[in-house]
Length: 327
Image (cartoon, rainbow, N blue to C red; front, side):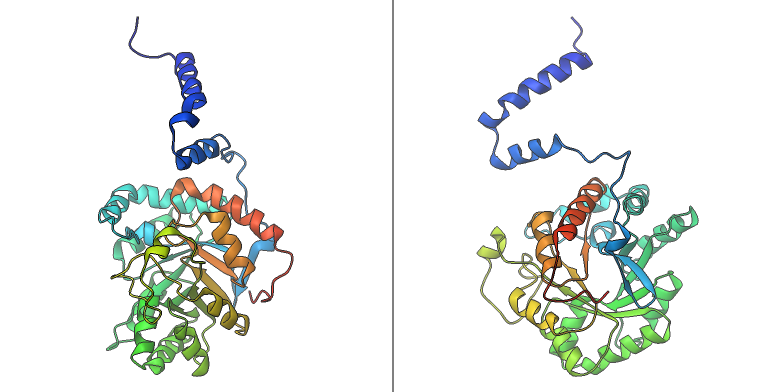
């Protein structure tokens, strides 16, 4: 008898294994098995309807945005030290471009990346050259000695908008340098891009509002604190240090929701899935029902279709919100 299983025998063995699985599999494995039995049909991709496309300035943006950390090979991986290397091996240039293409196919029209990541920008230019149309929001990390240089890099890379990266936004607010943030926002606007400020800490948008920095949008973390690793984290409420305790990003979600309810600027929520610790249905529901206008989410290629389907279903069920849509 041949050692190679026929397709029929393979399916028979697979079905038998599936039937026996509940007795030996963990709860997580059973959940994944059940989920895999209902795949999204790639031949008839679910897309965002026009209803779920917002606008900041003159730029129309899908309410789900493709995050850039995964594609750039960086991951919030808690104490798993190999994950960023794994991502850099997984996301080859072709796979990055294929992921963006999948995003477009399913109605996601915007992605985020660092203009300082020369390799990622080179891939983006090649993607555009082959006909790709996904828009680029640049998260910039300006040198205080030359605040304009990173904005120029974003323009040269073809970005439609730029925002100060959250780590710097938090640091400059702690240092009392809100005027520096205002100067960066001014350079972005002068360049003809939509302008934003990001922060993990609530005081970042708070101080920007108090100082009338007036960005076109904020990028602010939002998620609840129901996931396991947050429950194990320390109770330091003051400074979020993503490099020391890499398992939480929004320490005061209720206060964030309350503040943003009074802030009449578009809001891109990020870290809404707490780096994969929160299921998309729960994370999207929490973000959009509590006032976010957009959600930036890191996605593997095999997650794009499901994330869009979940986001559509969540958005369709949100009849009213305490915070109106500002984009």
